[in-house]
Amino acid sequence: MNNRRISDLLYKYTINALNDDERRELDAWVAARPDRQSYLQMLSSPQSLQDDYRRRKSIDVQKAIREMEARIGKTEKASRSSGSRFPFFRIAAVLVLLLVGGTFWYHREQTRVTPPEISEEVQLAMEQSRKMGKSGAEVLSGKAVKEVMSTEERALYHVDDNFAEQLEEARRITTYQNKEYWVTLDDGTLVHLNYDSRLIYPEHFGDRRDVILDGEAYFMVAKDKSRQFVVHTPQGDVKVYGTEFVVNTRKSDAEDHKDMYVVLVKGSVGFTANDGREQMLTPGQELSMVHSQLTVTDIDTAPFVAWNEGEFVFNNWSLERIMSVISRWYGLKVEFSNSSLGGRKFSGSLSRYEDIKPTIETIETVTGTTITINHQTLNIYQNK
Image 1: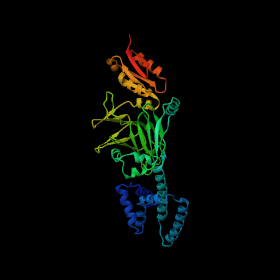
Image 2 (image 1 turned 120 degrees about the horizontal axis):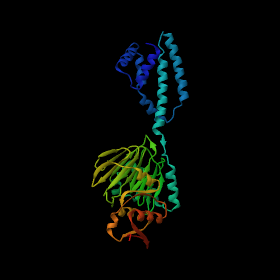
Image 3 (image 1 turned 180 degrees about the horizontal axis):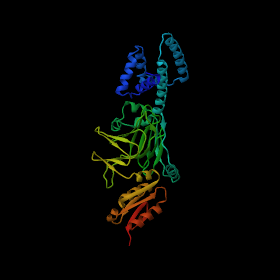
Image 4 (image 1 turned 180 degrees about the vertical axis):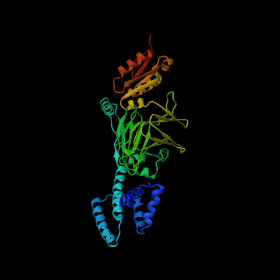
């Protein structure tokens, strides 16, 4: 067996890629020299190298190479004096160095944190929101966050001891009734909180990334293969690694009657309900809960992306449902002169950051109504 063949077999052995014939060929090669077994065992434990790397945190690769070359020199000298014809010591040394380098690469890839790419549309929406005075929230920091959480709340959001320890230094962001808020977390994850929503998160993540959400938020999660990202909600936990998705924990007062929903825009998420059931989602799917029943449906994610980019998108919504959103956003009340008007349908896209006047004019034109504002109330009439 030539040296090239030995190298090929040893390499395949280290990545567990030998077929039956190759396994027998390698076994015969090892059996011919008892001392070869120890080198085979050395090559079969890359995990020990990974563990050692994690303990030491760094490896002086150049020093390792110099030491390995010195050992190879001594070994080859001894091998020549004993009449050895196979330089398998060198082959083993090269493979060990490859494994060390592979361990370094593996550790780097597993611990690399990649912040999400923020589109120009999202950046513009953030700027417009601030300029229009629509960005606002109450911020609570420090141990006070943990102290205001009751035992019942910790149980509701599945806060274990590890998570509770991280909440020693945490923040609680609570948006106002007609405001929104963007917050960047410790790992670079960007969260867009909708009105009347609450996010609790550690100021600095440890070996895990856990947050608590009550309300609605669009998550753009930083990629980190070594630390799962978990959104704790009253209905269950949303578990992800790197993705974009929407979570809404509010019980809907509209036609859909949903207790909560999760919409996946990119990536992959799993939702684990409080009873232990887990449901995986793929992009373009919505998981909704109605009376504890989980349903997964295919949907158009464009309205959710548009909301994150500063647009209202209504797809065949009733006027009553639309006006509940518009009135809350602009801090107004709504009164219909005739309840039947609330059933009229509207489809379209409206800017969230415009003055209310062009928004009302568009809705009037499409629905055949007249809308006036009197004493902070939107009055809606049938066109004469």
